[in-house]
Image 1 (tube, rainbow, N blue to C red):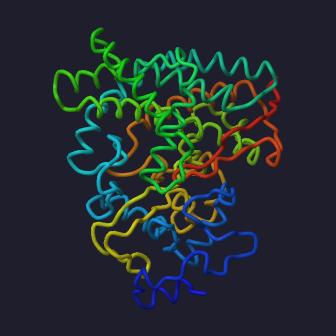
Image 2: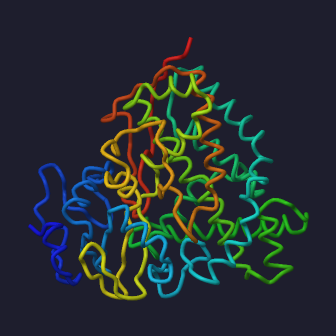
Image 3: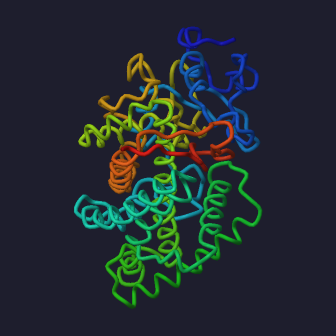
Length: 421
């Protein structure tokens, strides 16, 4: 078995590395794959720990191209900071006008159109609405003694918030959930090596058609919602084409609820594994800021950042060839003991979590991070005031996301709650 110390003695060309499936993995750990279609990687932290120690650059075979997974904090940080070499645009031509698929001037053009919607002043303006929606949801959830977290608590909050900011009345369309799932599947299939799902492009195009009509209406109404600004960037300013405007609207909408929904669902895993956390939040409400940052570090939903190398690089003694596809393992870096200390695998509400990669880093940092923080802080203040503990059976009442190439975490979770007296 190749070890880290052996790799460090001499630079090893990437093409000479053994593949993941050729390595002797510890008992209980299946070889790491690009796409987790079996569910072996739904809780990947033991994999990450072994990779950091033994194979900080892991070569994985895939029908399209080999993929190199980078797992240590220091190496991930270098990659995230060097956008000229670690290119965000993996495809030769970007299939969508999504900021996460673009670099340089094209990326900045798209980003600037919506950036003003996520500055602190803009987020403050929606705080009351977030509190109103979250309070109603939390009260109903607690009154029933719990329920399914995603459909009854977290998704309704994030959907209501981002649709309100965009100006997109998602509740008018029964097929919205199917459409958005199809967009992510199509996006992942054409740009992230994922298998997709039957009919994903056809269903996604229905969402594109619907949002094209919304953009036309909001333009005529001179709406100040984000989608109104996107429409004017297309019609008045010529910054975007019609198709780019629609695709950007789709991206902001889906990105605005999907990862935040998963982040808040993951918090329930923390509440069960570290039951003292709810009491700490209740006794020290001011600690909710730290709680959310530690949650993003400890169980952030975005696990991987795909990149394509503009030139050959050396990482942990391994030479990765120019043009290679690299996946920077953000979730692994967020638990690297070399950076976070020996308790990196424990949730610590008092930890100084600055330096985590849960919201990206550098020029590709997440625009929606302030909104995600607001929603999470609001919801968990409310729950801490109402709930003493949560309980569920991980084997029967939690479904983890699988088959995804980028994100990870709770898909559905049914829990009971014990009320705070």
